[in-house]
Length: 246
Image (cartoon, helix red, strand yellow):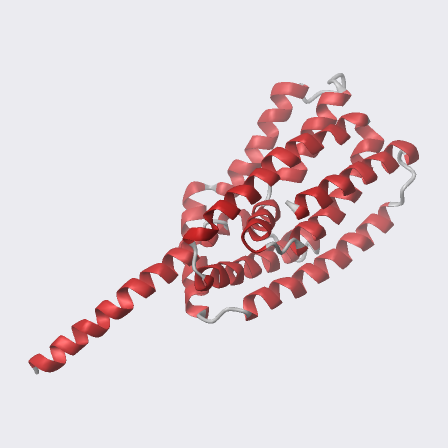
């Protein structure tokens, strides 16, 4: 929950500054900060992947997870959720309620995305909140920009962040007993690749990458570790039997 608390603080801080400054923050400042965060996120992702003890597990998880994600159209679904909620509650027009629009737009931005899910799981499983801390900085700048346009409704999005993001961390903490150290290591390594995708596709905007469709890799990786642990001894026994039979 530490990462979520930091995230809430930065949203409140950024939103408060945005209410005070209005639209006077230069766009070039925000762009430079986001680019710096993108470079740091890339470095963090590489470091997470290098912790892998079984790179083939990570590759398999990404391939299988990517196929599942494309089949389920996760990335498209996440975008559709945002569009539907804004149209449903804010009307999508200039006369829409600014409070409601600011609340919805900021809540979706802060909660819908691979970084939210991966960071919350990592925080809950290992207590490592570095990824959520990076997200917190970005959300703080986004809250500043949103609050200058939509007003105080942006600050109330922290209720959604606490419920959703904090809930994911708590759920991950409960699942810790079901995951071995190897499972967590390979899941973290797969998450590192997702971070690289986020940095390249979203933060640095070098090339579009549907990182959301790779999210199933976080589930596939520990499953592949489990299958390897189960199938390994069985395969050895089979070879022993065949060897005796020969």
